[in-house]
Amino acid sequence: MTIVISHEKKQEILEASKEWFREKIAKGHIRNTLKLTDPKHFNINPFLAAYLANFIEGNSHPTSIARALLLPRVLGTSITTSFGNHIQDFTNILLDAFGSTTAGIDIEFEDQIDHQRKYCQLKSGPNTINKDDVETIAGHFRGVINLGRTNNLRIPHDDMIVGVVYGVPSDLSSHYKRITSQYHHPVIIGQELWHRITGDPGFYDDLIEAIASVAVESDFKQEFEDVVNQLAQSEVIKALSDTNT
Image (cartoon, rainbow, N blue to C red; front, side, top):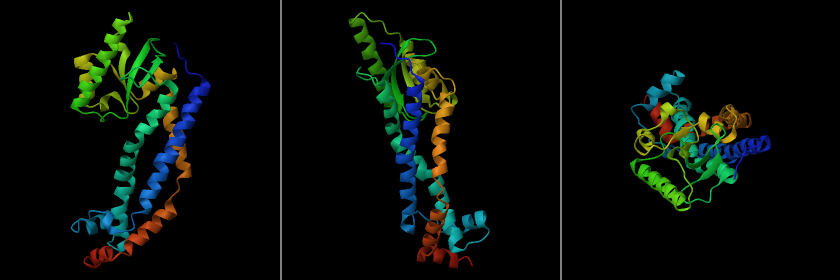
């Protein structure tokens, strides 16, 4: 069966991606930030707290220390962890559109560049598999190829691929590279993957833009300041400030 993605299907994927980010990432990010009013949520280094506050604010007032603790958490580990935890939900958007009934294969699609049918295992990012995963992926692909032979269907190694949802080829870990070098299955990442699925070389950028558009709904400035002020009122933060004034 040939699947050629339509304009309507592309828009469905873009809209579903926006909704995924809104519901799974943005709302969770807000919930996690609102919890950070208690110092117990941080591993506070008393040797660095005042230094970092002075580094970014020029003083070691309680609000400055609170901000120095919150910013790395809110802008770094919190959102990054949330994105990683929910990326499988994102791949379900593709599963809904191209889901495979073949064991060990996530999606099947007609490659819009070489027009060959592709059997694809989806992975989220360029560093999301380990050494053991390489053998598991190769084993699944070998099973599909052998089943094809049994059914008089020749499936070339090049048509058994690993698709990585985001990133660029230079980001790929050594484990991904071994899938290609040792087992001769392509690993296709980011812009090229979406181009091959949709036929649109700009779709990856459109996808990033669509998700980024959710940012206009994410003005959390006042609520963040409220969290800073509540954290600054804790005795732990006040004590750190008192020792440096």
